[in-house]
Length: 337
Ligand code: PHE
Image (cartoon, rainbow, N blue to C red):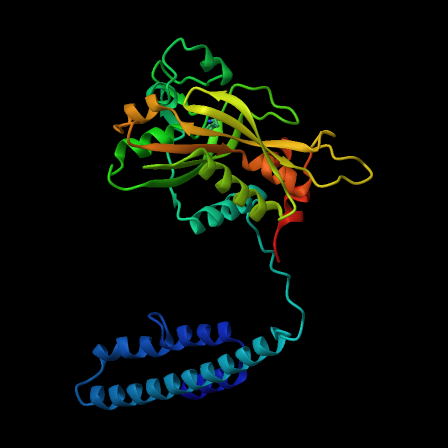
């Protein structure tokens, strides 16, 4: 039996077959096991002799099996290593890098400019109350100027903010009245407009607010001029036109001069040489009062600009929808290396 078993182990070159041999000899129904089971029938003198012999045989077969198993495993590993070689000299797949959306880049650039002038960045809710979006900005219910901004109402009191100006009221209301307020607030705003090349039902704004003792209109003009030159180049001019907003008095709109346009014509400036990029003015005394300031003691200026307009002007983008249709052929042009 021992010779037969060792021979079988020697002959095989297959791990499964080896396992089968193990079962055949040493398994529960194996041949050697059978012999050990039959020991009970032996005489008392024979038992230890046969028992010891059987044990020795079992050990020998086990050792042979284990040795063969190790040899076979090593061979299998060698074959695997041969066949699964990785060629590390092959070029890899290019890693695609994403990039910030053009609007995000513009907003960050504007943030940097104003942070450099001492402004703090704040963010406010897109779902706003009627109070902060209108009332606190000197637009009482039924005020005709509410029509200037067609509103998505959610309930009687809640709406999608139509501008970032509610953050003027929120910031002033919360502020320490002994400290100047200097903040800008970027964010999304919503209006019930039909989308076309210049309108979008959702777009972005950046609000600016400066409140202190003795803030003047000339401070506003100087700040906006510094901003325009930093953003577009020293050769640009700004132009303030009288305008109306219920929350500022006086109110202005600011245009910025376009660069001389090339052959196809400057669609962004529509041939006038100027493009409007923001509304601004001195904070209305009623707005100051509602937020807890004495308008006899404090004054301020506020402005609200459209990053889309600014991006359109800066890069010659001719359709606001490009910002929102996620065409990567458009967006990828502006990814920085
Ligand atoms: N909120 C105004 C708008 O959306 C812009 C503005 C902001 C005007 C601040 C004056 C002061 O058109």
